[in-house]
Length: 160
Ligand code: ATP
Ligand code: CA
Ligand code: CA
View: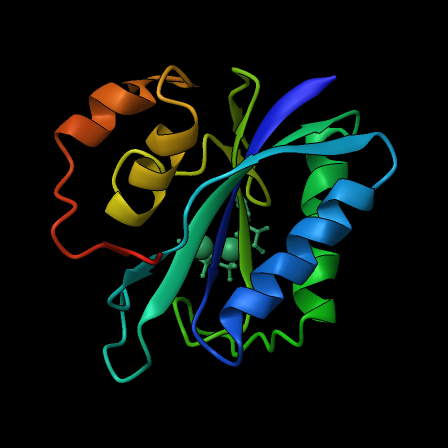
């Protein structure tokens, strides 16, 4: 069994409901158990500014799926949540699921990079990750809590 961390994001529709549904589906995947979920954070959009604020969260999923099987499953779930791939990056979307970490594995393929290259740079990823897994190792960058300590969280608001 591997321990993976999934980043959830979205800024279209009822994002909290979409997250709850997605988390329940993940927990139901064969050989997979949802272990932890961070609080949900509100965050201004990255990239094009003419779109609503994002909500972001991080979940820990224990799974027997391989990294590519997990990516396929996450992309299937994005589609099921009505995500439309507009061709451009960082456009408004109902649900974005990024595979952040998979044990301490490093993968560098066009379709799958682990750790996800945003993990150590993006406040809206590293802060929720450090909340649920301060000791998680981001290969090449150190422990989540240490990275979070020098990543500015002033734009993030945790929802109650
Ligand atoms: P970013 O990856 O910078 O957060 P994004 O989430 O908006 O941007 P997407 O359009 O969702 O980007 O995904 C673009 C491609 O990234 C996907 O087709 C996928 O194959 C690839 N990809 C590479 N590594 C990962 C990963 N760790 N998790 C999810 N997708 C990944
Ligand atoms: Ca993303
Ligand atoms: Ca993505």
